[in-house]
Image (cartoon, rainbow, N blue to C red; front, side, top):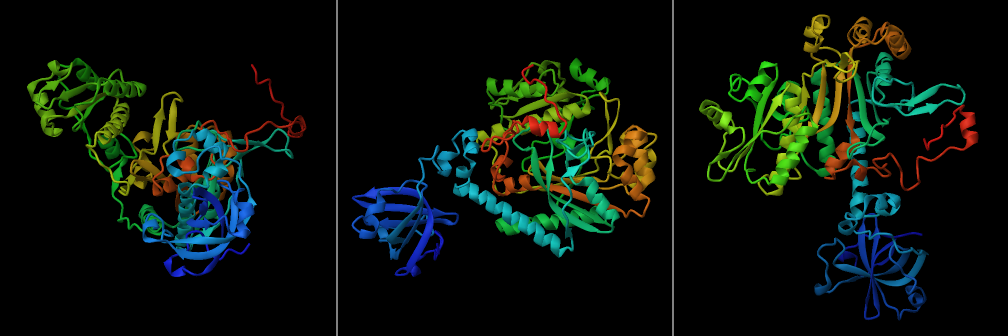
Length: 596
């Protein structure tokens, strides 16, 4: 099978050439006895013309079916001006077939392999026949862009003298992180590996080993409840460097992302990226991964309402909470149903309701709470939120973090309502990169009754804050950083602790991990730090998320060749499946009755 050209290669200057093409029957049309086939391979389409009077074709033509694999040989002809298809690169030519080989006749596919039609097909059906779904041009393009992004990553990091090193997938269990996949060890009865959630500890050991610059496109595994942007197995651009500080990391990652965008989209993204502190991100956008493509910023009105006649606001502030608000400009025509949905969203995040002021097109302010506001309070709202006719103002009143979370979510949903009305436009090719920095190192978990690491327990404190570890852990800033794009975190990392005494102190004194557990899970790491561990830091970027943004797809399932459903199932091959009694016996595992 020696094809001379792909199905997207022939042009007008090839007219008269003898060619051989191989591919799938994309469309099949009969025009007065003459058969027209759009032949497709991964590169594109070529129109092939079959004359049933041709002796070499007559017998096989009636066996042609959609999605059958065929090989044709023939001569390139020019299409007439009226028959030219300007939408196809090959639209000025066609191939007059002289021979036909049917390599495989296809049954009727369970759904049309057409981008526009297939996007409306039930996703479970598409995942069941994933090998057919991937034949679609848009799906192939997703895989193509992913491959280019991976190559751009390797090329760039190779130029920066990184070593690509594979680390084990079979690791030890570290239950303080995300839920893990456990793998029983047949050779060590009663013991289990865990599939690595990330190569975090291995890459730190590589720094102790003197590698200095490591990376890999790492497979990671987490047994968590799935969402549109989560999979039980996913891929990270994982890297670690010695003898660097945060500025070095910012410059490196900005260069890497600039290369990926240039190689994949031919887009020059501006660098350096803006930076925003965690506190500013939460105060202004209500989230630590702000979407800065639109405004609708949140303002703090705690001082304004400290002595307000509205007891809900006054009481919240008196008990240590805050009152915040933002102006959803132009959304005063929100329907009752839309307002009810927004209120339900706020309640799902712990709010008792969702206070608002609706400003009509005639300039009238309408709200059940308005009667409690003084003229001074209304004037300050007017000035600071730039309130105009047709606006809709939302309020949040609770503890600081909850108020931020509530209004941050309402802000995003209000933006979607404005987009639906055509009052907010966000171009598909707008890429607002941002570094979010100055995170708190620890947060106090009320349920656990102890401090928890906001990033992970290996993150180094900001040097000038180390002295606060004993007296005020919550005030200690961590040297970690998140790379955010269009409201999505695409990567996060930190400068690591490399001194054994400080790492032991964080484990035992701050995080309150028992000494025996520290030794069991991290003893080898603390031991290694005693042998000259260098200062080091790293980051992990989500390759799946990056590719979904590059291809403008809403779900990472679309850019993974064989993804799982939200129940963690591979519908194509029916995984996970049951194990045989013999397999379970060999692993010393007994399965309880699952019907209970």
